[in-house]
Length: 319
Length: 319
Image 1 (spheres, rainbow over the protein chains, first blue to last red):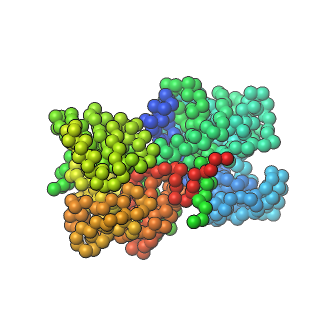
Image 2: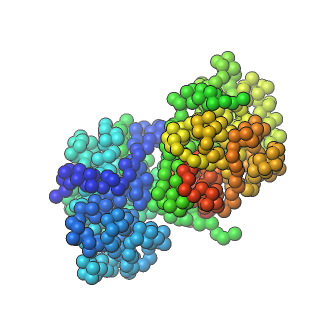
Image 3: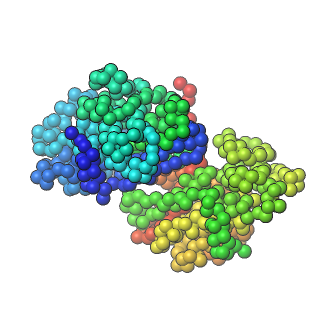
């Protein structure tokens, strides 16, 4: 089981290869929300997302012999780029299974880090089959995007930093998709500051973790249809178990609140974040009273967004 | 005449009221440009632009008696918000003359800081007349957006910070419109690091400063039509005189390069900057060889942009 020692070891391992990201504040957003907000800006992380932490830890933790055979994953998102980059740091191959309908931006990101892309049909079964085949052919190690203890430990390092940067937080708000970041956040928080309230935030339209948490049983959804593309995954079994014992609460937010939160953060903090990263602030928009007077940490998970497909605009038609 | 002592005095005066903005770097942009780039992120400044520096200095430098009668300016941009904020800091009125076609966003910003807005017809003569009338009626002091020694000294503090943050720069690239920032940048650079090359960058479609510099005579243009709305002004006479003796060179950039630079900075640095702020990086896109191997400072002037009117997208039509 992942413990705090694993998170500490991960931190020591990855520190030379990641950014210590800044914590941003805004008098205006404090005034609007009635709380004191501390935004951990993982949009400034390597590859533009916290995923660099877990992937780098997983790759650097491999023995030389195992590493030499390479790593593999299936992901169309930030984990794909993060794993490709981590593999390049170590000088080993990365085989990335991506659905054939992946955006050109994401394909270019993986290629830019030297990853080898294997396209597959755009469904979960095809992804897993293609990934299994790559592993059978190459002997590469699977680095799952979130159901992996090395990945969870790596993601937990964001909270280790946050609590060192802002020691007296009352609450931390963390988005949940597959749950790797949430599990790492909860484990780091419980150890470093047992009284800190850990609250997961999830798009209502991808609310499997909230339903699971309330029922006390993992309840995957057949469809998670949200603009927050990083959070369309069902929570993993390991991460759900950690969530049950180490997370205090979960709240869900509407699509409208996610878009408003994203836009407000761009406009006020002057930073580019992706829709998934706006989810914690959306919780503040929708339930200000729950956080009034509190010191609230919010993990801004990433900044990889297609500037031609912003939720409030459309590509310009050719003149 | 503005000297370095004035810039130092400005810095001491405004420091409690402004942000020491960070300097951002990117391995990717270094690799693309073949130079080492240091971005001074004034988009994170109070009111979202370097203009907070000059306006705050001008307001805080007033004697109590003069200050009590308030301040006035004509501006539809960042200076308007900056002056309103500075006046509120000091508890005095700010009368802001704005053209009647100013964007709602800009009007709200000034109102948000407690400024009193006086609308006028959207032309230079009407602006100046309205401003003169306000001053006659109220006894307020004019704080011109760029032709003002207190403003120039304030803007120079951005470069004082930049050179302390990155002491061994070879070149600094500074956008030029009215020339207040350029004048302050050049004066601070000449004093602190005489060998530093100071290069102005201007949109070719608003190229009055470049033409003036080459002819050795101030040559205002009748029309400055560029997407970089902060740089549509002709360079002022004081600032042109400072430019002639303290700036090494000026380069002009195309509209296409400004848009590409803006988009690249959003995508890579994950920050929101306005078109004017992208102008220095546009110079690197268009003449990489001139800066190869150099350590280049670039002043990112501001981040106030209408998210519904990005150069590469159009507002979404209602569903």
